Image 1 (tube, rainbow, N blue to C red):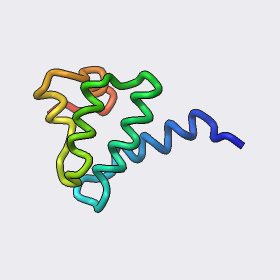
Image 2: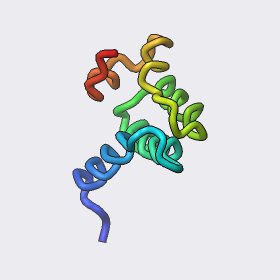
Image 3: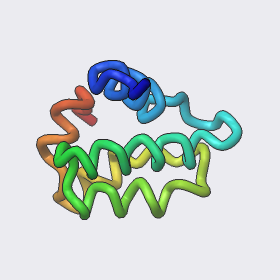
Image 4: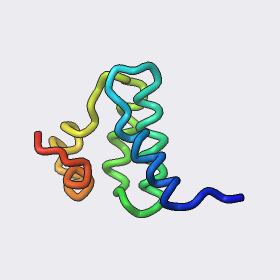
Length: 82
């Protein structure tokens, strides 16, 4: 049986918010970001930042997204005010 879309979104929301510094957390955030990109909820430039940060578990992608001037809607959704 296929997973409910809301359950999928909730699971990936938790993954995209995986705490910084945990082993494999960058890859988990990137995998979740890919889901949001495929759903049309994230643009390609924002996804690229998650890709770049995927091997850097302690790197927060949100300031980089802000500094690049991409993903304003995503930053708002994440509650990023930094």
